[in-house]
Length: 321
Image (tube, rainbow, N blue to C red):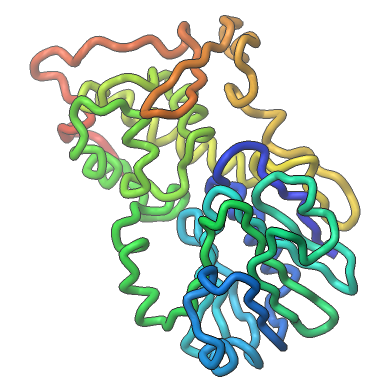
């Protein structure tokens, strides 16, 4: 048995939360046959009833992949289900009525009776399994797409590299940041064209580890600071994935509770508490329209690079990666 008590403790799920959910789904529904599909709110799914019956119902779920914050269910032919949970989406899998996997927006009804008021689509699977997709604010979507359509999807074409993938090199990161000048570095990180999957929580955490103020103009980030930030993104996200993200109340595997990343966060939920590094109280402000936590001691606003000193937008002769 594999279960994720994976309601997200925050706003829109970020890469570690979606990856945690993906792993739970992979373990619980891969290989399942989709016996029926019921759409309770037609705009939620882009496919007509005949298309659903032809290319979804009767087919098996293959690999479940993730790109940024989106889930991709591969079917056993040249079709896929592309699931965007957005702000308030939820995925719930039950077997003979008992929860197996659930994740997404943190509302109490995620563990209540299904379907509920917010259920938009129901997939009846083999072996007594049911997959429910809920969404309170109607922003989430399910799209039925071919492999060719998926490859050409603008959502993916404009997305940056995966933070933990081989394509996220220091050189690529530098090139992606080159479009920014006066914009705060946090705004650059939140743009999914820079790097896929980073949202508000992890942008703050990565900047703290890299010792960069979130308001620092991107063009004034030094090459040394950029190297620290590139490394911090990998360290923070890898650790968050290993500890199931900021899901709550716990991660459950084989009936046992496991700690989540909430207990390891440097800034998230810690406004006014001492910085884990220096003891200075964590402060909160707004950057790029988002609530932002930072440590004023560990993350001072740096001066602009001196003439001739390389910044984030300029290649450093001996930089690696």
